[in-house]
Length: 593
Image (tube, rainbow, N blue to C red; front, side, top):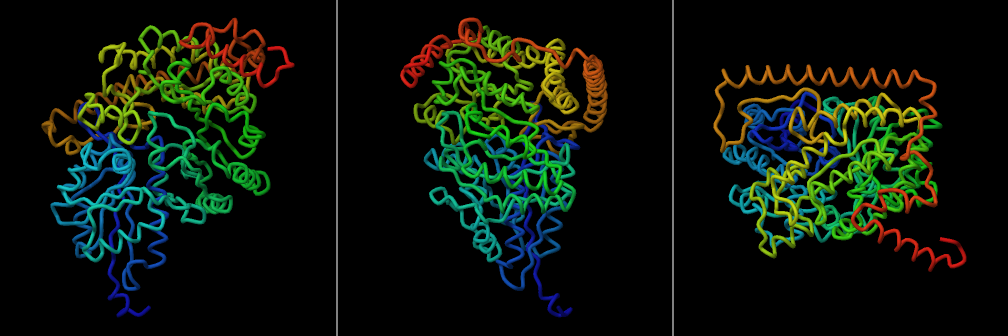
């Protein structure tokens, strides 16, 4: 290309920002290294890079893509405005994957760009969920219209180029709604982020969605109302492409973000391809997946997961009380299958993580304490992640409360599943908040963490990886007052990143306090690390540890229903056992039950 031709090229600045949200003191939650990579950013970057390669705006326009994940990178607004000015304000800011708790922060990021008359678009679960389940004006969407932010509902495959052309021509529309036209993602551009962005997350891990949609109807879930209940999936060729793309940069660990990979209709072909890449080509894959509690009933699923490189599995356990599960339309969760399922993963030496929701209708502080003790004693779970039942905009729970006029918290920033957002029939707000905080200390006691390490040695679970997880999950709520999934290494703050409605603190007060708090927290954190690491070492050096056995690790027995508190003490447990036996008699009349 000649110098004259190069001079005619205009450079469209596409700035992709994944917002964080504010902590209880009003500061942006940001880390030197964040825990979880953003799949929304990876998906949008892959689509945007494809748009750039195809010159979708025009042959004389190049697209420069800037990626900012605010959980690990400061949004330097003056520098970004200067970047736009150097390019004649030709470009667009895209706020990516905005969840409800990130919506206030997203608006605060957008304001200075809109004040500079720059095009801004916003997509993600908040916009999509509100438009899917409400009337389009609820839950703060009017703020987008007032600021002139274009709202994007749906998925960006095949649609991002429309926004780019409109922004380039100065004709960005107020709303792009594709909720009724979810795209096929097979052979679509694959999620990808350059290594310089991946390096800002723990463990050098990338992420991708192998599929979207879930067949279940959980009332607290937003995914089924945004991504649909029909399984849409990438092909094994697509997955191989993105693995090779990342492996070329030395990245071989992935979080597969499917809400329920076990219901991805292409799970087996994808696992088979990953097994080939791992066993035949030597790519040292390390995967984390999310599944339901019935995945072990799928032939070869757990075994192939192990061979494909799965080292961690997140299970949507949610609760051990059948009455609570029924109230949440979580009927697919059978407590009678929990131990069988968890032992299947243990047999493969895979770390198990489970989400556990506090605040279902039958919950009280007393029942929650009881249930945590049952989980510790009888379920072979490694990591339990506690959440408050939250009426997330886009869920059936929120829709029902909103239509019925039930009072909910107005500040979307706290819709982060760790704050109480509405009333409970059997607990006061203070009781609910207190038992949420207490739950972490109840489960992650020194005694139980020692038990978890013993179980890990006995079942072949990688102890070093488990220690890292235990450190994070045992300390983050206590030290940082944030959920471990929002955590990272070395909390970063800046006075300018406080919510605009709160007063800016004097730098002479802010910085000394920040440095002192950081030092104090990391001294305590170091002590926890030393304690857990030394405990793990001592257990591993004891030959008897490999023969360790407790109630949780025992094989499922015929008398479990009569002896385990999981069935005899939980709310609805006895009835669940009777129902299971009734079904067994009807389906296998000649077998003893």
